[in-house]
Image 1 (cartoon, rainbow, N blue to C red):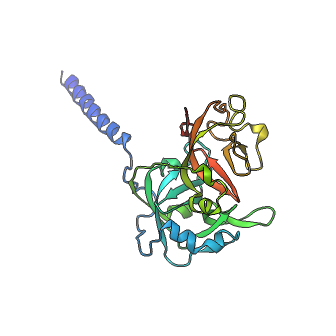
Image 2: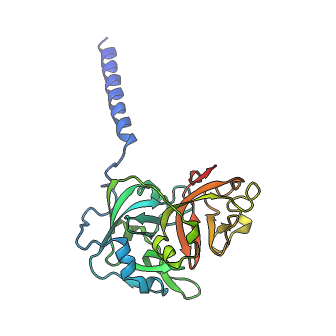
Image 3: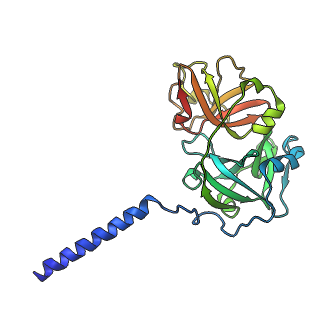
Length: 278
């Protein structure tokens, strides 16, 4: 009988312990303190708009520059790799502007969810652009000898950001009347936006990104009816979770990170639910 009582007590204790574990399992690391660099402080904080203005000549002349003194930006994550379409990048905004941060790390959405505010220490990182899209990272030289800002190592990145709290995120409506406006593109490239009331060319027939149509970057551009592909495309990686889904046939609202490649808007859908059918 004593043995039976003993086993009952052990089973009861295990049940309590497991219940406690389950509660903790549901909300791991809610403050983000297990990632990044908690020693980062705001010693020379700049807005993203100030940053892009200060380095405009670098960004728009295809050059790059290293940050040599402590300089920080603070922003909220608006885009990540949650469904595989935004590769090795995150987009952040601070209310004044937006910028892309390039990191050689997969599954980054597990640490940096949409809505997570971060502060980034820029000293020893680089600012530049790819196709005039402002980016932060480290220099990379391609096989053609061209050097531009690209992905920093995940180890370097871990020492350059600090997690803060969570904030609500909403997109800005894209103004279709400003498609060809250079200043509008400079101000908004990299921003989370929504283009409303549009239709895909090939809707109901083509998929987002057929492997046989991919370009050198393993991506496919899809045009919208009534909008020149020289002005705006929806760009999807063949590795995106929704790459083989059929394009919607009817009118839709499309939300995504509105990047640029020179003078063409490239809309990067974050996840399939970013497209809302009318």
